[in-house]
Image 1 (tube, helix red, strand yellow):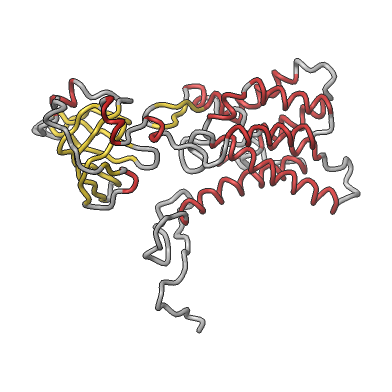
Image 2: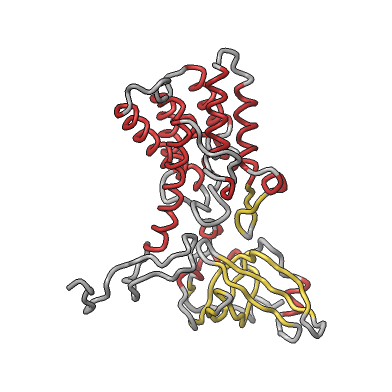
Length: 349
């Protein structure tokens, strides 16, 4: 590998996520993945990916590449590196052509290296979000046994609730994303429950705000065992792939309910239904559609929050947009309208 002297790289440090096509420079990145393969001619090569908190770029290390021996013998997934390279984009996505590379050293802290910068986290304070979520449960779940079930699950699993992602990609796929998403869904669910219980006063049985709030808080509780964080990002566990968070979450809820002797069996049944139906349709993972008023409200609160996050992510930028529409390559698979460019008149004028 290159020595520190040979790879001093004293120029300004760039951020991978901020590099523009064909820009070259020095950057810090973590090796997210390293895959060995062969060309059609049987020559070995490595496809590696480096990332920071917001972007991942691929590097192809061919057998005749100067870094091939070092990559083969020394590069380790999860290790931070200082790289001099050129950022490009092609049909395969972001690419990084490496000129120099070495593992990060203690002295790199003087140039701004911090491992915390490589893990995307929620923009909101996680302790404050957690306290608010517990407070909503205590205020709006008026059935004491159900409130106990929810609050105990939150407090027993506080570390998971505060740190986990809500998904492996697409929406809230970052540290604290689970909590940010769950709190947002729960706030919306409270609004829905209060609105529709006031509208439809003759429903029998009445709409249960307690169940709506409990279901909103616990709808994704199975993510605790579905996802795990690795250097390459959030990944599915074996149980997550083979069982899925819906049934894992149902098990967590039922196991907890079994420890609360005075909880109403129908309440447990209705909460179980909310958890397993919150995705809405089989194509999205739910074995049954929402078939109670409470389940319907939780499903739409959840779906709205996930989709709006995906849309908002396409419009959040620090620089003025150069095109009227976003690229269609996004989770919603549609071009999002940003606005007319200066000097462009609408067809309606």
